[in-house]
Image (cartoon, one colour):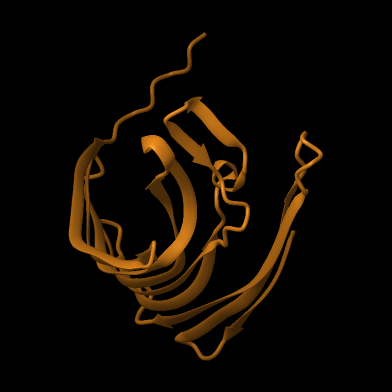
Length: 217
């Protein structure tokens, strides 16, 4: 269940503020066909604030700073304690006590737009806690047991650029690119592990405009 409230204020001719908060309550529970096993239940709640501050440079361009907190709840397969034994030497079981991943996201964006040219450039920083990962342990007689745990935290710093140009109302060229650096750390079986790396991607495309085809009879 969830509920939210937000408000918008025009601070001046150039400055604007949008702020709000969202409440989410989550309940997890289940029973076993085997009545000798106790039913399970787990509840948690989150209050997720968000704020956006806008600055109008001109009629065609502006700057926006935003902060938002978001959650990613675990999938049903991750929390279902059913023991999957399709392969008797590779067992998987869910963890009904998993917490959601919580991310604090900060963004600074600049955009400008004309009849011919559009551009959006942004930088962002994301900090996530209670990261969910699959954990594999080898138990008796070489059987592997996989389950899921909240193991640690991560941070991502990056930027993205999108631009488009329209040529004589006949051809539109578009392109976008994203660059980011990721760092993660966690505790697995009392061993601290870390991982980090840089990633990038880009896409270019062209679109031709023309008359619409007449509808089929």
